[in-house]
Image 1 (cartoon, rainbow, N blue to C red):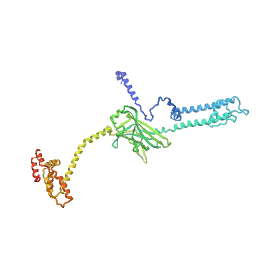
Image 2 (tube, one colour):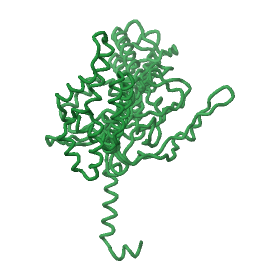
Image 3 (cartoon, rainbow, N blue to C red):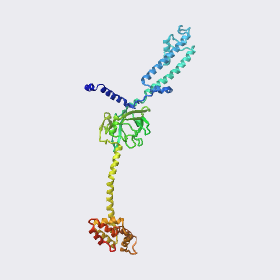
Image 4 (cartoon, rainbow, N blue to C red):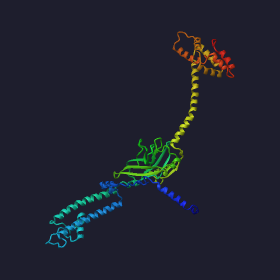
Length: 479
């Protein structure tokens, strides 16, 4: 390392600083503890809006500022009210004269400022030692005493209420709601899914617990508008109710990656170059206080593990289920295709297109034997004379019969068909069954009613001379 520094000098240090600065530039929108890294600046005249909601402003302040305001408010109120009692005593001349039977002061036994301060504290805290008290000959003292009582009640209600709400905020309840340190991508039920784990450390339940996920990613619209930190919703079971949690044990939240998911084109290779952040929000009502609690965390692209799965943490003991939180964040690798869902669907469609001609061929092969079976079945139902004609057809060589039947399906003579019909005269007494047999005969006769010209064309094929002679011998006289 020292040799490299001597060789490259300042250039090596510049590269190192550049790498450190690049790491610092990668900022989270939401920290792992749920704190949002957003600061509001240049408010201008809008800062006065904070004073309109002063109580909420005090509650939102940090604890050190709340304690400072609490102490300063009581200290200033006590000093001001003690000064007012001392001023009344000074104006009446009670400080210079001795308090006895001959002289009745406004406040008995108040000779200086410390004694006036002690009188105010005893009155405000309703201690009432009995040594210092207001006499009936001091109307201004009676009015100040009423004002002191009202002002003290307002200050106590405001500050004590602020401190109580500050202490009872459910933010600390969120500290006992756990999220896994990393999210994983693997297959579940033959579907690629993004998963993470949540858990509750307390025995008290979260009532009506609901979870939501947001994808934070900058993008550019087709119109050229750049949207920094654009928020997109991730479906974690909103339509099926899977986002409503019964959080008594650790649960694995699943987001199915499909055509509607923002991760439809995400693959293992593109995950390394992507830059996004997944914000997870868990909301529920605290069972003990009835206040709404919200816990947040986030996962960056570096915290998403491809081809991993969470270890199980539940085990059955004697009469109860035990949760092992030492394995809460543990994962293990599982076989997962490195392709995106889009690529998998495209590969599947291409393979289906390639296999479609083979399927069509197999279908034709299946249909052909069925047609042949139908023809043989109909042959047995024909009359005797027609069966002789069909038996002559069976005596033909298979190859010639195939060629003649194929050509006969395209071209046949209507006159020949009428001659075939005259060969099998039927009596007037035969009805519908014989008519159905005659229709089947017409279908079979198509193979035998090709013209002589067509047969001569078939003789031109090599090796068909002998077959042509046999065909002419087996046909009826007119043909």
